[in-house]
Amino acid sequence: MNIKQNNMKTTILILLSLFIFTQTNFIIASNTAVKTATFKCPEISCAGCKAHITEAVKTLDGIKSVKVNLTTKIVIVKYDDSKTTTDKIKAAIEDAGYSAETVD
Image 1 (cartoon, rainbow, N blue to C red):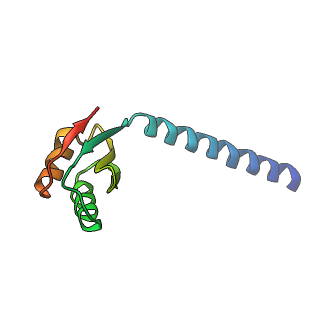
Image 2 (spheres, rainbow, N blue to C red; image 1 turned 180 degrees about the vertical axis):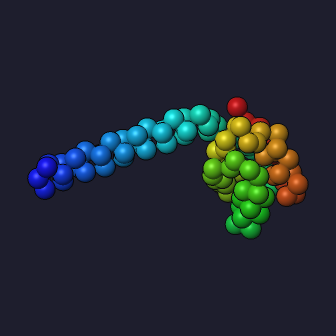
Image 3 (spheres, helix red, strand yellow; image 1 turned 135 degrees about the horizontal axis):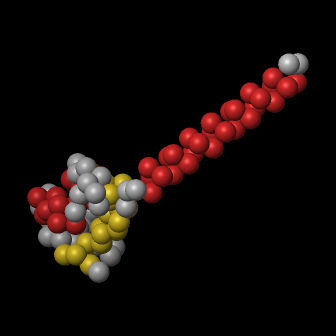
């Protein structure tokens, strides 16, 4: 076998490995459902409140992101529903000292 054929085989094996790897990651990623929960928190008034709520919610397993809007007093949380629930998120906000009402 010459060097050119050997390089081609190596390239094909690398590409095939990359394809299999990306497909496996896609299958693993698609098995977890990321959901969004929205809460109205009327007591939010400053950057400290925003940081306090964000920190409290991020302590839960499965939290992907927390966005707190000071103007609308809305908290939007993206989470893995196999690891946490809206009730746990609401409880974390309330344990941090803020009321939280689920918004549909």
